[in-house]
Image (cartoon, rainbow, N blue to C red):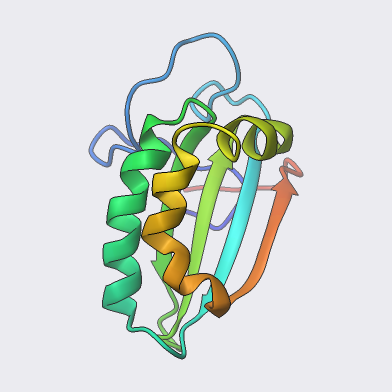
Length: 132
């Protein structure tokens, strides 16, 4: 994966279930909102966070508002993690996902880590990217 705002969908690394062709999607190149959640772990282990997102990811995959997600660990600071979630829009994330049936079990899986979040914001694609 590259560091740009758009993810590349690789068939050998599934992000989740297939999406209908209508509406925004990463594969179609439509604009999506990317939420970045940056963690600095001081109370929990990285293994605990990864395990929590394996569970929480099931609920993201079930949500039609979520197009993709990935969790990465900093190589220089092993307690630092970044979660990227690709949403159909910021409004869909806040109004549909957060008020829908998938949010309560998602939040239950990651609730213990909320105090270790140092950034949680939505970003828009700028169109500046390069990928080999």
